[in-house]
Image (cartoon, rainbow, N blue to C red):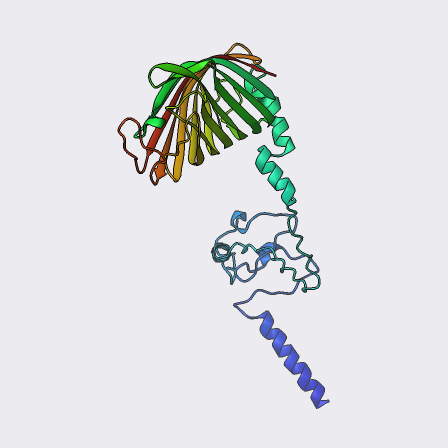
Length: 382
């Protein structure tokens, strides 16, 4: 019983203290009436707003002394949030993954196929003819229809006049002649870039003096024939062209057997030729030609006398010509040409006979033979 009495006394004393505390407001409801908010001490407690009101804390109107400051300041939260936002770094771009190189074993590598080369015969053919069949066809289609270069064959004929003079320190090789002549020429173009060419000149009814008293017949002839490589500098009729090649040259001055004061000559050998056409208009072109014969085989032709100017000789020759060409159309042209050829013979040893003019036997005879020919002719092509 004493324990129960002690418990009750302690409880009643606590309640009494709570009811009579001058610094407190009774927290218990009295008389079953609902507690009004005014009866609560707002200095210690705050009435919580309903959840449905979504207004910021700054918009809540509260009387002074009734707001309990939050342990964490709202402004501080905003500042901290701002600082945190400011220090957030943008995401670093990630480079796409690099594919690792695919390595294959030597067994898996594809075999290296060597480039196919044309057979040697095909290469030689294209070198000589100036290109492949496609190159040749393209040029034929591109050239002007009225251009004479489109002809496969051309034939020329020209009346001419010539002068031949032989100057030497031996009277049997010293003479001159002049007279009419005839010139012939032909070109066959296998392709626009390669062809064959031949030229021929012959005097007509020529004669020369013998013993300065009477004249004897003489015959002067020149022949060249060989291959030509032609290059073009355009497709129009005003485009220049140049050709070069190798010829066989054969020239002679045959004197009648009636002569007993002079002997004939003959020279033959390879000739390097260079020719060109330089058009100034669609219908007229300047032409030039150069022939170089560095080494010829020279021999003397006996007449009424048998004479040798020396035991052996060295012979060379050069020829040059200039002219013009009028093109009436692709098939018909008119041309003129002036040609000058110089041949030099250097003999070794003494002559076989004494010179009748000075009664001396020369040693080391030197002969310079010059031939000037002027042509004016016609050329036909197809």
